[in-house]
Image (cartoon, rainbow, N blue to C red; front, top):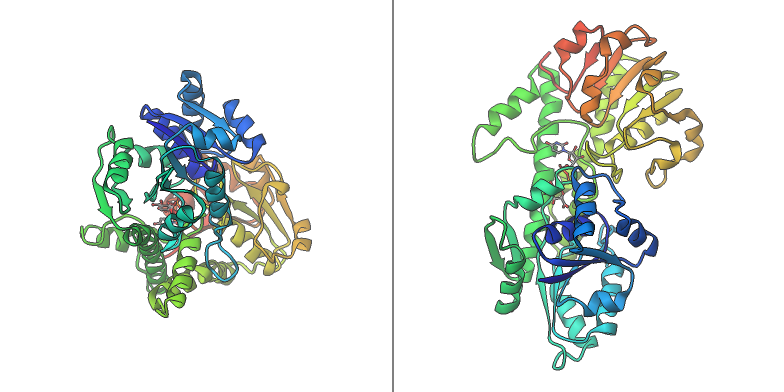
Length: 441
Ligand code: UGA
């Protein structure tokens, strides 16, 4: 089938590549001509395991091309899959500016029947609004247009695996034949289809992310208590997860969730709830716990090592491992928290960052403090002379560093593991004064 994927961001590019990999003829469209050129040159604009090779292979086979020409993007394919950003506005609602622009572009060039598939995470009610809007700006008698909601459930860092092994494929819409067409896109995958109306499809996406965020805040809250009483939160989560009704996934305690999805989607649900005069009390607390988790861990650090005037190496600014995405990154918030507590010098290590300019600070962060932050590419250098190390992102390479040798070059050997990633017994045997989150001591 011929598909145009509108928006070559993280989800759009991944989706375009996966569809091309499944044998479809795919056009990736983006208004950013520079990005399009780089993609056509085989350069992926983000880090995601397995995808750069896939991009080069598929470009070679001719099954995918990228363009910034809106006319051909619309006219060449019958299926137009929308994957543009829907960032949060200050009130928590999603900003649909890009989506509106896409609908205008479709209306400007439409030359035949189209199925518009919404991949972007959009607020509940948006697909129905899109259908109305398209029929307002297009002569749909002449050019029939259908809208289908088809949310994605892939995790960054695992995008390829998740796309090829979907837990489910949600198809929300009103038109049987358009829904069948969209199903055909995925027919070579083993998946279970869930066919429903627009609102149900949209809500499945938000409720899933809200629930996963709730699992994380739940385990983080229990971890605060476990930390006081000497319970091992990893054991607690393991024991809970053995009950299939609970499942072991997304029950890892840490310094909170980040990324482009959970924080934004929880905010959007809260905003939507208030619009609908339905206060979502549980999700409000989920957010509150997450927003205070870094300060909770910093308090714990402070009780062990007074932070003022210290030199601290922070490992990880990507919001999680195997990605260069820093949106809502707990690592970055941790650095900002430490600076606020008077730390004298922060040395940042992350495999995806080579300079200070590559770090995206939170809105409202006082940048005058940046004179106290440096990015290093040599982790040994970051640890040498430091008073403490804080692990904020569980990059696998952090486990392989020669910690025994480095305990000798640090000024003092405090290690704070914000992700419960390293083994306390092993780290202590290597000379570190090790603190995690509720490790049962
Ligand atoms: C999340 C969902 O997992 C995907 O199913 C969904 O499709 C995606 O959002 C989306 O809406 O596009 P993602 O944000 O890539 O995926 O990453 P996760 O692996 O879910 O991690 C999110 C954050 O939670 C990270 O900061 C991670 O470190 C943290 N986390 C995750 C925990 O603190 N504990 C856990 O047990 C799991």
